[in-house]
Image (cartoon, rainbow, N blue to C red; front, side, top):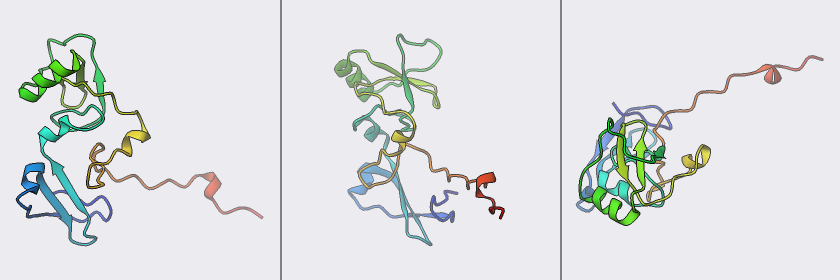
Length: 145
């Protein structure tokens, strides 16, 4: 079951409008806080400012100098167009273990990549994992007088 990133309750799948069906595979809404989470269609991963994995959509991809014969190559018309437009800029996803062509630049590493939002303001580049609570250290203890 999909969980809400804000309150942790279960998300419920909601109906999509006719036009939302072309952009989203699913839309989930939290029953408590009414927060929405969308799952984009895979072809939308080919559009945007930064390179994304065409399978999982992560921004954490690396460039390869030459094709790796072990990991599979993503097929399809959009990958062929990326190869023609981008001039052999080969990328590799470390999570899906696939190779693909992409003409766009790489996403900035670290916390800057967490600020990449999709058109509805939802962070689609980073998985929805709740951040752990901070562990109190010695400086947060009560001061001695």
